[in-house]
Image 1 (tube, rainbow, N blue to C red):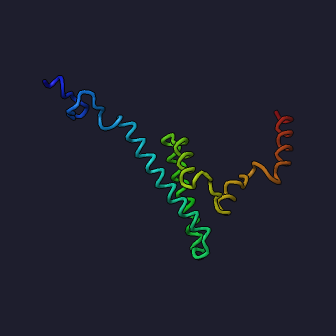
Image 2 (tube, helix red, strand yellow):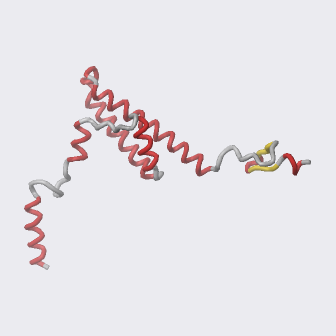
Image 3 (cartoon, rainbow, N blue to C red):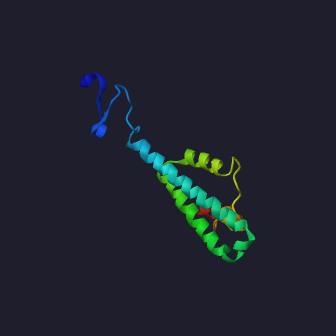
Amino acid sequence: MRDKHMHHHPKHEWCGEPHTPPRHAGPQTFRRGRAIAFLEILNVRRATLLRQLEQPEFASIRPMLTGELKAIETVRDEFIAMFDLAAAADASAKGETGGAKTSPPAPQGLEQDAPAAGEHGAASGDDEDLGENAETNA
């Protein structure tokens, strides 16, 4: 009778039906679900900070909000990279804004668009001269 109606699941769980699936698909899926849930929390916090930066009543604390936004984005980016959540991050970002991404405030945009020292800009002509000197010295 036991073989007909009950079978053993991992972690000593018993089910009354013969082909009832376990309660969860496995630890990896469970952890990924928790990671995606945490990523959604970070996205909500990011969206809230972006919205607050646009509101005039928060103008007096704008530097603090900008710092908080940078911190949240840093943690979010590291979390996405650590858990390989790029696809989930894209889907979650679309979901938080109804399919349209919001543009970050000016200080955030400047940080991403500004070239690093020696990459691009006025010094690019000097880089060509250095390259020619390096070829003649080699």
